[in-house]
Length: 114
Image (cartoon, rainbow, N blue to C red; front, side, top):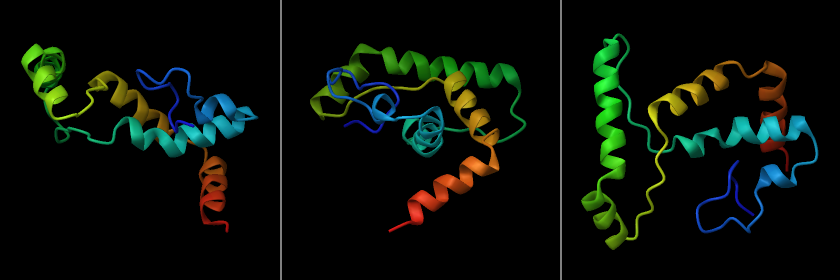
């Protein structure tokens, strides 16, 4: 089983936890808990950076993630490249901030139960 919302490239036939979840609430708990996996190696700028600077940084990141030399070196080292763009990271973080307290508490009780 993959603990992701979408199957990883090359593993489309391996089921995800989301596909096996029985209820919408269970899927929301998984989305909340596993969102950290989508932004695991996060690159961030401090608050207050002007919007066009953010756009430049995002554009440079996106270009790097498509650069054939970068991808070739990553492949040689056995490092998968599956980037999440800045807009998606923003959506993930905003969704985390909107998580209802009841869902956070239920997640906490599941994680702390034996």
